[in-house]
Amino acid sequence: MATNSKRGVFLRGALGLALALGACRARAAAPKASLAPASGTAEAPSVAAPRSAARAVKIGLVAPLSRGGVEATRTARLALTEFNQGRKGADKAELVVQDDKAGAAGALEAAESLCGDPGVLAVVLEGEEAACPQALRAYRRAGLAVVCASSFASPRPDSSTATWLCPTQEQMAAAAAQYCRHIRYKQVATVEDGCDTAMAAAKAFVDSFRRSGGKVVFEGKWAGSEDGLQRTVQTLKLDWPQAVFYAGPARDAARLMLAMDKLKVPALLFGGPAIFGPDFLETAKLAAKHSMGYFPTPPFSRRRKASLEAYRAYFGYGGPGHWGPLIFEATRLGLRAVDAAAKQGEAGRSGVLKALDSIQEYDGIRGRVSFGPDRSPEDPRVAVYLAWNMVNSKRMRYLFRIYGPPF
Image (tube, rainbow, N blue to C red):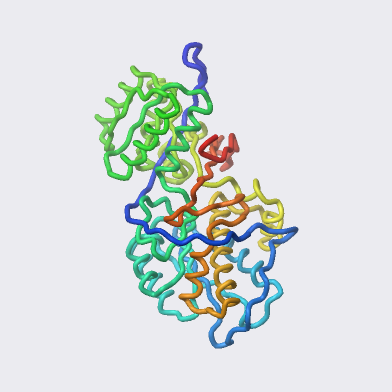
């Protein structure tokens, strides 16, 4: 952190954003549900009508297991264990886990496998690749209810059978701008890599910052070249913004941060979850200890102590990471739809999809979540963090948490 008598207090950090494109469609509104644990362990929904032992109820989970998606499986299993409390035989649910191999081809292969299993009634997707348009179209053809836990895609692709728990990148960028205003920053800059999705995120940041009375002194494009990097940093040094919002690859975010550091540009380089990923850390190295970014949800342990205790009791250690609350709530939401459909005597896929669509809002470990007409969260939750001594100790210091916008 550097201090300047004329400019105030500044931080340095970094970002990488990943986005997707598509289309959304409206859904009918209906009653709220509650996913929040009631006491020391999460609540167990009431037992539905008996099901045939030959057709065990299954919930699918698609995650990048070959790229560190093991935590998603653990958190989903916790939700499944809580759901199964007090149930016997065929009334219990099973978790079917598929690896999307961190790519669209793997996601489609996983989708076809789940669609071909008649026992699978709902699917939870973790990550951008799992929620790719090809896979979503396969789920739609099969009539499967889908809960996308952590996809930033905007607009929502092929969402006719999908409910989304994660805000879009535009919503996240707008929240980042409001955070900058919240800490009294008056002038900022943006740098993006020129792709459509990055431009949309940068525009959302700019529009949000200007609406709240701030000034944008520079809107730049940089596609990764060394010459372009030097020109961009020299311009930033002359304009002297208090914060720089970057939309592009994580490695380029780290390069931009290092170049700003070398030329002593005292600005916060603001961004999203990728700043804590390996691509950023391998490039930024020790400079990563000053990085700042935002997540769509606070840590699991910050909201419901009972859920954290249940996690520790089940797995015997710590607590899940930043995506844990989303995976947990997505699994619980899918299981609640299965249970509701069975109670209505519509235990097949069409009944589960109808039951999922009928949930307009619910109370989860992140608080109350309400869905808009495109089945996305109406009020995105954003948590802001500062990475501290990340490379040496593998630790992250919690700096500031806000729900918004508005803040």
